[in-house]
Amino acid sequence: MGFGWLFMILFWVLVIAGTVILARWIASSGDNKGQGQSSETPVDLLKKRYAKGEISRDQYEQMKKDIS
Image (cartoon, rainbow, N blue to C red):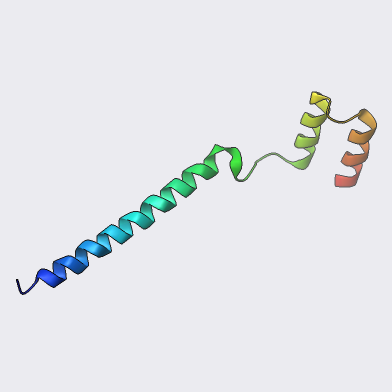
């Protein structure tokens, strides 16, 4: 019983560390689903918007000029 307090502290340290690691893992897996950083350039996004018909040719040309 002399070392019982040591095992109790070790137990809680492991529980807290496990919770922190799990939370970080869940947060990082959410970033990989397209919600985080994008590898597309602004011009690529503009091209997609133009292709979808969201913007006109004049708007596309003006925005492309503004970006460059």
